[in-house]
Image (cartoon, rainbow, N blue to C red):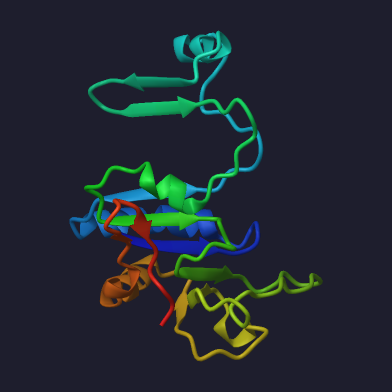
Length: 189
């Protein structure tokens, strides 16, 4: 499986870009999964639903499935900090690409998403000068990047071109299993 991260400040367009990349990859016959970093207490379940009631009753895990989807909700008894690698290990192994949103400090190869500041606002800082895992920058304003770079600069508004670039460099994004069945991340080149 191939794994690529997308990092950037809130409002930079990470979610929109990932959302646009999914159908582009699917059009090319590829199976895509997404890992998203969420903050604190989030919920995909709702009061009154059977699965919610089971969790409230104390179930450690609740799995709900139909002929269309599967949902797993796991409650931690103590706060737990999971790495992106823990989450990748939970995914179905038959996926071609995993798009990881957030986890900006991870050791995954990633594309930094950066937008030019709105008039009257300061530019957000960039990660790519100090993060060897940033392999490209997706931006709406390449001429406004605050720090010159030799990394590829991709058009944030052209998801088909971002997919072309990912597929041209697909070997760099291989996420391998070690001899113990653990996932090994790719390394910057």
